[in-house]
Each structure stands twice: as structure tokens, then as C-alpha cells.
Length: 156
Image 1 (cartoon, rainbow, N blue to C red):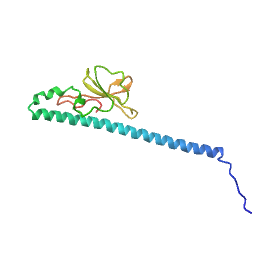
Image 2: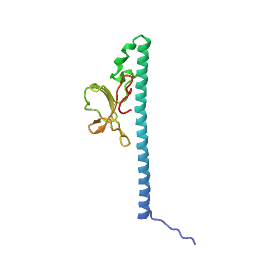
Image 3: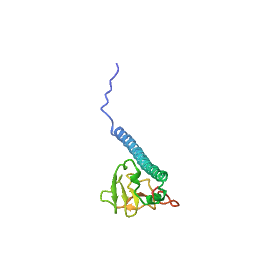
Image 4: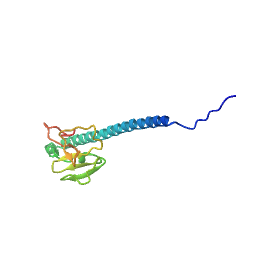
């Protein structure tokens, strides 16, 4: 006659092993999610900068074709957001100093330094020794400069 064995449940050791495996899997998944978020933010910022460059080139070519090439120098130090169809997500506007609501993921144009600034959300893999710090956080910045100087400055 066959005996039926009833198992009462997991032993404490088995339970601890299951919890450890689940915790390890969750940690790996969270780390990968942070990497994906960081890559997404980097792509969004790079696309914004590329769109600004395209808008600037469009504005320059417009001035050349209309016979106003002498006014191209006036573009230096200007707010590059003007040449976008719409401002980047999180754009706060123009300010002479750091705005109080300049949180992570926000953009603003610093009218005093003539720079477009962005405060990254993901900063753990970001190193920029020339970038300004805003309230202890890294702030990337770009500036429209005349020919002979980098078109986009620090943070590019």
C-alpha cells in the first residue's frame, strides 16, 4: 500500500532561499531600469541639442537667403530655444539667476551668462568637471558662440 506524504510548506531555509532569489532578481531589474531611464534622458537631451543646432542653421540660412547675413552675429549669446518649434519638456523660461523651481529634468535660459541650462535627473554616471553646480547638483549648459569658438559650450 502506497503512503501519501503531506508537505506542510516550505522550511525556513527554503523560504530564505526563495526570498534571496526574489530580492536579487528585483535588484538586477531595478538597476537595468535605472540604466534604461538614464539612456532615455541622455537621448532626449541629445535630441534637444540637435534640434537647436538644426534650428540655428535654419535661422542662419534664412538670414543669408534674405540678404541679412550681417545680422547672423546677433545670434551669438541668444536663447536657442527660440529656434525650436516648441520648448523642451520642463523648460521654465528666461531668468537672470537660477530660478527657485529649477528641479531635476528642468531647463532654463540664464540671461546673465547667456547659457541654456539643464539639470539632469540621472547623474550617477555623469561627469563634467567644467559644468556649473546649481544647489549642489550638476547643471549642463550650452551657449551660442561665434565661429571659431565651440557652437555649444560646456556640457556638450
